[in-house]
Each structure stands twice: as C-alpha cells, then as structure tokens.
Picture 1 (cartoon, rainbow, N blue to C red):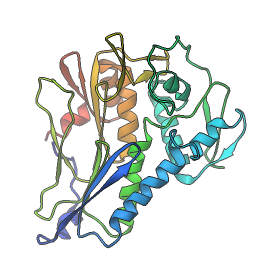
Picture 2 (spheres, one colour; picture 1 turned 60 degrees about the horizontal axis):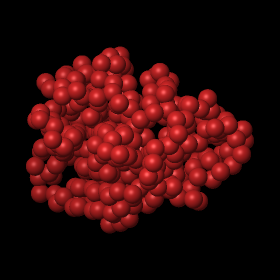
Picture 3 (cartoon, rainbow, N blue to C red; picture 1 turned 180 degrees about the horizontal axis):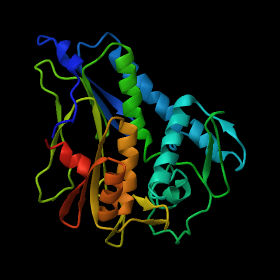
Picture 4 (cartoon, helix red, strand yellow; picture 1 turned 30 degrees about the vertical axis):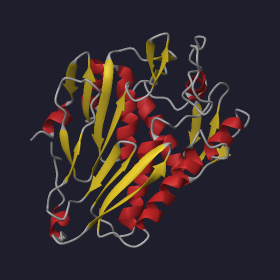
Length: 314
C-alpha cells in the first residue's frame, strides 16, 4: 500500500549517500526506536525528552504526573493543564463525540477495577460496574479541565500515539526530514530513505491469523493498531479484552481481533483504532467511510477495509 500523495520536496532533497542512524530507548512501559537520516547531535536525547514530557503529564502510573494529580483532586474543580495535555484531551473528546460514545476519556475507574491501571492485575473478576455518567470537561480557550463525580481521566487509548507525534515534531523542528519513529508498535514515517524508497512497515496481525498481512509505505503518515491479543485478563480459562465499551462498562466481545488505522497524525490513528475496535467490524467500517479514515478490521475470520484503505492500494 502506498499513500495517495507523495511530497516532491522529499525527493528533491534526497542524498543517496546519507547515513541512517538508529536510536532506541524506553517509555510508557514499552520501547521506542528511531531510524533517522543524517540526524544532528543530541537526537536520541531530544526524542527521549519529548516522550518523557508525555509521561510526566499523562501517565496514570506516575503518581506525580499531571493526570494522577488531577484524578486525586476533588471532582468539580477546574485545573489548568499544559498545552500538550489539552491537545490530547481535545482530540479524545472529539473522537468520543464522532464515534457515538465508543471512545471515552473517563474510563479510569473501570480500567483500575479490571486490573489494567496503576494498581496492577487482579485475580478475580470485578463486580459489574454500571457505566458512570461522569465526564471530563475541557475549557479549550482557558486550557483547563474538570471531572464530574465518578469520572477518572484515562488517556491510555490515545497518549502513546501523541508521544509519537511529539517526538516527530521535535525531529522536524530540528531539521530531521526523513525518519521512521516507533513507540510500542505505533509508527510514523516522514520523507524517504536515502535509496529513494519510502519507509515500509508491516501491519501487525494477531497470532495465528490465517490471512497475509499488509505492507504499507509510511510517507508522511502514521499507523496504529488496537488488538484484543495485546493485553487482557484471563480468569478461569476465559480471556477478557482490555478494550472496554464505554456504553456498557464491559470488555468488548464483538469478534474484533484487531483494528489498524492509517492517519497523518499518530494520535488520531491511535484514538480511532481504539474507537473502531469497540464498534465492531460492520459499524467500524461504516463510520470509517463516513469520516474518510483508512482502516482495516480483522474480525470473525475475515478482513474488512474502508474505502480510504482500498484507495491506498492504488
């Protein structure tokens, strides 16, 4: 698969003899890697600092993060937040609205109860929890947020993708025009390789999936995959997905194995992959077509692709 548009400037500035340097590190409980063409000194540290900023603001596992302090504060109070934090909250709210509630930022209590939060795994199934009417409010102009009773902010469905974008923004601002950056399986590619080829990546597929996977050219594009095989809770031989339907308060059981979304911004690919996973295959593709999202759903032993995905096939 190739993008629908190629940037002429990427080819005009190509240096066939340039060196691709590789960097790596850890963040958000996973690893990150970078392949960059002719990066300046300090590139590895710059990327790590960008990712550390996301953790410091948005991690539910760091007790001193902005998110954790917000969740500990009494409900109903407004709290000023950094610009990056506000950008992620705004995107999450917009995806939640556009998906009819299939994505929510107020899932922290459910996540903790099922063992996917900072408290760690649980040995028994939690009691059924009716979805909270609580919500997260954002004052976009004043850049402040508040939560209502019963709502705990959880950005795990979108923050990792934003980390990819923030690191990419640092690279672009520091003159790196050609690179592939990855955080925990979510990727963004800019420009091209020195040999003139794009940054080719293989779409992640669930274990034992019978079909062949896709190979995509990430030229000024990002890709994120959400899957029930990545994390889950196993109790008495039963597997429960780590993806929750905010409308029911239960782990999804809709036959979806994975959803992959290709988007300009990795944050949006990440958030939309989460939302489409909750909707189920048919509804996910209908919404992806409506929103012009390039999406591929693996479910019920079949592959479902959106119109924008098919267009990328050329």
